[in-house]
Amino acid sequence: MLQGVFTALPTPFLTDGTLDKENLCKLLEAQLKAGVHGVVLLGTTAETPALTAADKKTILDLCVPLIKKHGAQLIIGVGTNNTPATLENIRQAAPYQPNAVLVVTPYYNKPNPSGLLAHYQACAQEGIPLVLYHIPGRTGLKVPTAVLNMLLEKVPQLIAVKESDYDIAHVTDVAVLHAKRISYLCGNDDLFPQFLALNGAGIISAAASVLAPAFVKIYNLFKAGKTQESFAAFAQAYPLIKACYLETNPTCIKYMLEKLAFGSQTVRAPLGEISAEHKAQIDTLLKQTPKEFLIK
View 1 (cartoon, rainbow, N blue to C red):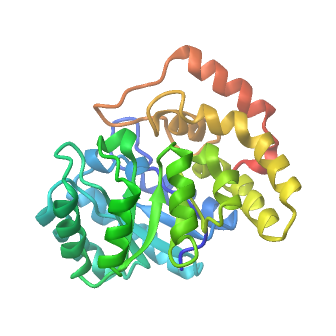
View 2: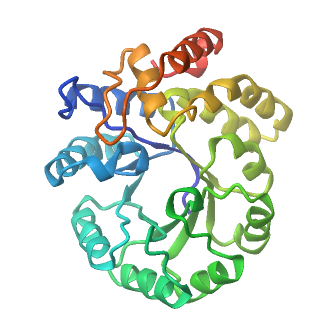
């Protein structure tokens, strides 16, 4: 089972847009020091669509040994909207021995149920446990509960779901049906308490890039039965969590990381620099957030 707080790791760039290896390792070490239970490499937050094949290999080569040295869990993002390309990504991830690979529901072409089943069955044949990534806001594809039930029944290699649907009725349906036998992972940072209350296994969090100590505290307090204290910690972190998404992820997170001395705010096109208004808002919230909630 995949459990706990997983940071969706961003990719630091130098101001010229090239990979910032030094701050990549520094950022990863800060996550592990904060006590996260796992790391997701090459997810959406990593700006994977804008990375070259060489970039991806460098990230894996640098990060995987550090993750394994600390005994943390490893998930590698491999999903595309092209089944053969996804399979090739899984094969390239395999030598790094991840605990699972993250496979988003194919975007843009929006497969029907039979196509979706064929896609995940093909991925399963590569022999690595799968995390289904459900994020209708980015893919344009909402997977009905009945279709998800079918996928989980017919593809036993699907050991987890990263749920980024804001439809709380759907979330509740899936949790009631499946949270005891798969890892039901929160994919929306601002819904973390709700997922924990619904027997969720943990979270894959972009905001944890900045707020890893806070997310670990929220999770650990909840698991210790201190639910009110857990929510109180969440409430303190909530304004900055929300600010992570003032503009498209990870643009705001990159700005926060620059302010915390973890590299530049540089993102790759087609993403761009955030507005001066949002920078000022984030500056204020960073000062108001308890220092022990922030990575260092």
